[in-house]
Length: 638
Image (cartoon, rainbow, N blue to C red):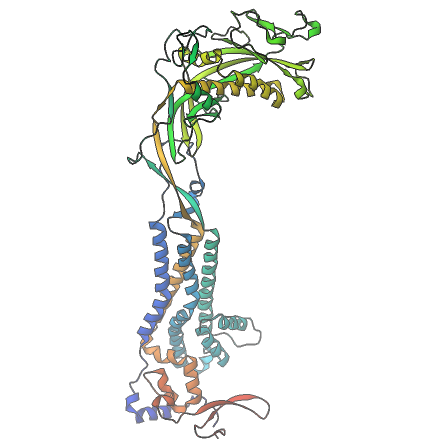
């Protein structure tokens, strides 16, 4: 028996068979709405649930930027999270968990495309039924050709293979006009496939850009944390009036005469430890000044700081600071070479009536006008008032000193002519005019860095206390080594002056450690660093949008299926499958009968062993075709 072909002229016999079997008259394939509900749920619910879970996890666990205790603090130290705040979410959930959820959406999307095409099949069945029964015979060209029906059945599977076949068919030269049902199926499956691919790309983009970063949580005025004492101030009594720079005077803060009239230095150990950076209590920080009163913005200062401040604490505190500026005055002091000297073989200088003498041998000219250290390396002369007219005008509380130094020129070679430096007989000579100001400083410390400082000049009676220990010999070796190191490392006399100025400021701050007390921070906040997931907003938004578009397509297809008289067209929709096509080809008149289940189209469903067997045979011309064999014979049926 050859394969059975649909008989378009058998309506009378079909009616006769239906009349012969009354139980088939009202039999219709049911379950349309249930199938639509299941297909719609599989297309939309997983994507909706996963997207909602993804959104809820991100939004509910998104960390807001910590609020600083300084509402108008422009120098709030930014870390990686604050720099990327506008472009990323910072979520306190591991990146692995979030990315797994994102990956599931990109995995599910292509798997449920077959159900999207199942929903579309109801609309296609409705169009097929309307075209088949409601149009005149001459307009039947709107129905698909056998090959186009083949494409429709492949498209219903929702795979890329069927889509590629249909797209290639569109661009084929020799073909029939593509019908509406095929065009709709191709467009819908193309949209679904493109969405699946875009979801995959968005998920990949999210994977690549998501990272784990440190996140800082700021806690302000938490009662669990005691306010720390990072500030420094001078001891009571250091502001007594009438104190002057005098070698015979004593400092009421840390100097006194013992019973034998020997000068004692209170706090000497802590002062030297601070100066040598070995103290566990105090430290010296040299930092560029960043704004304040009475001095220009380019000045640098040394600050007395807490030795080991807790890196988790940001604070504002007060302290003591010193700033020193020096300039070379070699030419202004009329320094001459020995051949032209009026002092014999010595290097003579004459800066003013109160500041003159000789550098060679560093002999002092006048004890009354040149008070300070006299040694083998430097001569330091100090003045509470600007007795050296070469100094620029400075605010009250600034004291002035001049430095004359000589060194071994064999330690380096000067390859330039510097008008403020003399080299003679293997020795070098220079003179610096300096002024130093002591400050009461208020500063802001953030994330281990001084971010802002305000300096106010101290009263002269307080400033004088910081110079007395130097007059008494404190820091002598540091002062002697300062010009040595500066002269060896500096390339110009001004660089030498700047290096020595920093050294002198540090020595003054080392002195202040012996006469200072701690003070409570005026403000403070605590930083706690956690590892969080940095989720870029752009790929996140794209992925969520694509997921929702996929859901929208599913909802649109669901509405299309429901409005296409799904219950009525269920018989057509069920037969527009490979199952219906096989039944039509091999089950004869049975395939044309009304049934309540698509499987009832096959004789095998009766449970009797009378179904034919399907094989493939070769024709005489070398072609091949399907044939049906009787169940009890191995020969082809006639």
